[in-house]
Amino acid sequence: MSRSADPALLAAAREARYPIADSRPDFDPILDRIGSARLVMIGEASHGTHQFYTLRAAITKKLIEARGFTAVAVEADWPDAYRVNRYVRARGDDRDADEALSGFKRFPTWMWRNAVVVEFVEWLRDYNESRAPRGAQAGFYGLDLYSLMTSIEAVIAYLDKVDPDAARRARARYACFDHFAQDTQAYGYAAATGLTESCENAVIAELMDLRRRAADYASRDGRIAEDDYFYAEQNARLAANAERYYRAMFRGRVSSWNLRDTHMADTLAALIRHLDTPGHPAKIVLWAHNSHLGDARATEMGIHGEINVGQLVRERYQDDSISIGFTTYRGTVTAASEWDAVAERKNVRPGLPGSVEAVLHETGAPRFFLRFDDRRLDGFHAPLLERAIGVIYLPQTERRSHYFDAQVADQFDVLIHVDETTAVEPLERTAPWTAGEVPETYPSAL
Image 1: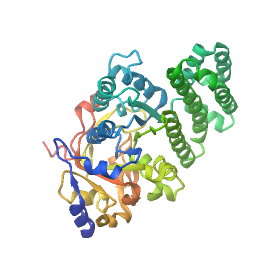
Image 2 (image 1 turned 180 degrees about the vertical axis):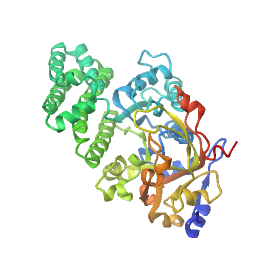
Image 3 (image 1 turned 90 degrees about the vertical axis):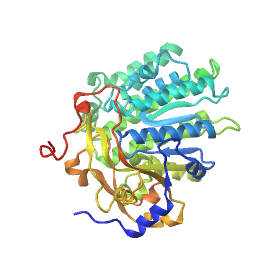
Image 4 (image 1 turned 135 degrees about the horizontal axis):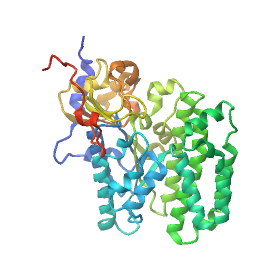
């Protein structure tokens, strides 16, 4: 049985909300809240919702055009995203955004191979070519660490060009992984359980070797050489952290989650150092799931000992950072039913009673945002249920699988609510996605 939202919370949300128009939405109150912050984290309540992608892209364009932001760092693998970076800077060989995004072959491909991301990448390329002042182009970078084997290949390819002897040493070190082919989880299990010797010493030795030659490699051809070295070094660091991550997967969720989010926060820190120039500090937009960018200390994650990027960024950069989250009440979403399964277009059930989604739904407004520096919204510092849909959506176990307690006003600085949302469109449509989900009322709906 449904129940009404807390009257005080509902009244506050109605009074303090900023409507988002369908055409020419006004994001100025969000930009005012961002102020001079140079790190803007923009989340998503699912990895497969069209409106989350479009609104996030629209805000990011504003930050690039009006505030001089020069990088977008996303929850994606470093080498795949760097290929996109080369495309938007007109340094790669790809003919269009679709081709530049073709490196994203690992599940879930729809996270980055979707229609909205293609449009944004083309916009970024056009901005850099026709509107960006010299030296102020905006790049596209990945923060994640799943690309162990691809990153190893990238390190070797770089060394083949600049130092063939070092490339031979790298091949010998990374050969530790050879008999696992591309199965990184098989390696992690074997190393964690003692069935094979760990490759930890090999990946660390290669990273240290690369860093010892940094000054030589990075000074050979000006800024391009610096960029190429930075790309290779981050791949070597990723290989070292990914090796630890795949072993940690078999020691429990908290250990592997914390290692992954710390890696992403450290990659951001390295990117800031690389992009900082005298008088022009790096200004970066982060794109990732709410669970990575909303402060973990304001959710059940913190109680369980988990940290995340949002917490680490706030701790390290304080007022230089702003966090923006998303919620939705109902609609459709692109998601799978299990890991590594095909994309489906699924119905998102209405938000549960007692959830932040249910409160915001009862305002009656279709799209709006809240700024939690507004004292009228202090009631949102109390715990409420909040929904998170990742790449898998299990509506049959929704309460257990997708809801957690969160103090949303401590988790985010701004919260965007879209009451009814639609599934993001993958570039590769599967039959289940095209067909959509059978209505819950079937067969009575006939």
